[in-house]
Length: 155
Image (cartoon, rainbow, N blue to C red):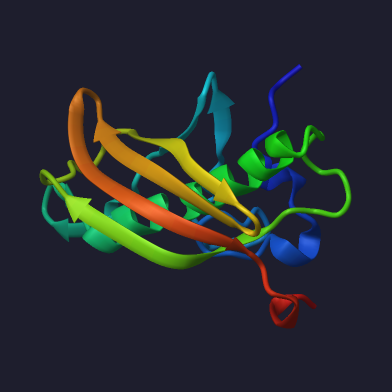
């Protein structure tokens, strides 16, 4: 049986995000999985994600960190409550703060791996540290402060 990504458990009304929404036909479809004690996602940038020939636009790297961070937060919240993803009430997180450090130019045309580690879970807030690598090359590091989606954002 194939492992499901945390985003596969999001209810339809929470699945339209450009970065991770499975229902956004123009989106990136970032999928976050657990790999031991950290999360992992792989994204292969398209040619139109170019900044300059051969390199990825930094906004895409930031989007990967953003959505992988909120996905990691949701997965961690289920784990902290000792319940499987997709059980009610659903966890859906949004970004309260995003910090990105670009460490090296990110090459275009290769898979990018995002890895997340939960730094803190406190109430409705989860802080996640994320790295983005192209092969063995660390390209970016970031931190996402994710909070449970406010009621006024729910449909």
